[in-house]
Length: 418
Image 1 (cartoon, rainbow, N blue to C red):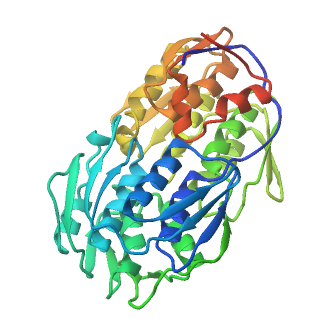
Image 2: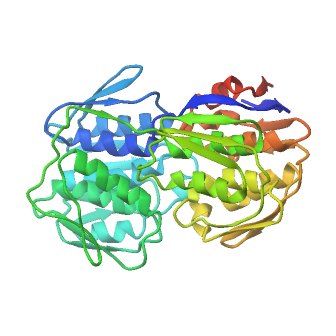
Image 3: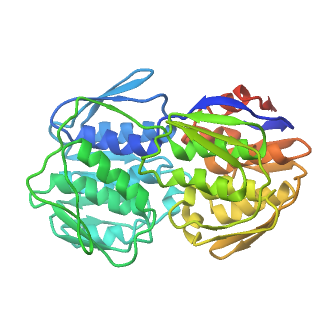
C-alpha cells in the first residue's frame, strides 16, 4: 500500500496501544505457567500474533478476543516443532532458549531481514550448555537439552538474548545465571523482563556480574494481567505534538521499565512544551533546539527523534547507535535516506547521525524500507513538510501498530491511498 500525506496539523487526545514488548514477555510467561492466564490488551500486531503462533507450536493454546487473550499453558511440550518467527526478532531470540530448555527439537525460520540478523553469541552459550544449533543465521535447527550453569554474554549486543535466557531459567532444575562481559545497554528491556517474571512468581536476583534465577522456582499464573501502554508507539504522537499541534497521549505509566519513556524528557530538553498528569502526557510545539542524544538505551526512538531534530535549531548529534544497523532495516542508512529525501540536512556516521535543523522540510517520496518505524517516522516528519509526502509500502506499520494510519487520521492527518 502506497499513501500520500498532504500537509496537515495533528492535535487531540489518544490512548497508547498496549506494549508489544510487555505482551511478548507476558505471553511467554503465561504459556509456561501452572494455570490459564487472561491478558488484557487493546489491540494486537503482527509480531504479537507471531509469538502466539510459535507458542502454539510448542503446545500452548490461546483464546483471542477483541480486548483480551486467554492463555492455556503448555502441558507436555512438543518433541519437535516448526517456529516461523516471521520478522520478529523478539520472538526468535526469546523462544530459542525456551525451546532449548523444553528439550524440543525445533526448526526456526523467518522472513524479511530476520535471516540476516545473527543469533551469536547466544548460539555459542546454548551450545556450551548442552544444545546444538546448526547455523548462526536462520533457518536454524535446534536440538539437545539445555543445562543449567553460568551463561556469559556481552551487555551491548542485544538485550533480547538476556531476556530469552532469563525467561528459560525457571524451566531448568538448577536455575541459571548470566554473567555480563560488558556494560549493559537497553537495560530497561531487561528490567521489563524481570518485572514480568516477578508478576508470574519468579524472582530474578541481581549479582555483581549480572543476573541469577535460583533453582526451585516455577511460573505461577496471576489469573489476570493488564498489558501496559506502549511508550515506543506513543513516542510518535508525542513527537507529533512537538512538530504540529497539542497532543495528549493517555495510558502511559511513568513508573514503567520501558526505556522509551525517555522520549518525554528528551522532547522537553529540545524545547517542546511537555506536561503530565497521572498517566496522561501532553506535548505542545515550542522553540526546538538541537541536543546530543545517546542511543544506547533507546535505539527504537532514534528514527522519530531524528524527524524532530530535522527542524530543531542547531546540530543534533546522535551517538552510540551502531546497533540500529541490524534492525528491520539498517536504520542509520534508512533514516538518513528518508529524511534527506524530504529535505533534511543529515549525515550518516558509522555509529550515529548528525542532523542540522532547518525551519521546514520540503516533502517528497520515500520508501518505508520494509520497516515499520521508518514508515511511521516519515509520517511524523511530514508534519514539518511544505508539500505532500508519499510513503511506499506503508502497510508495514502492521508489524507493531496496525491502527497507526487510522489514528493518524483521527488526530487530523490527511491521507490518500494511491
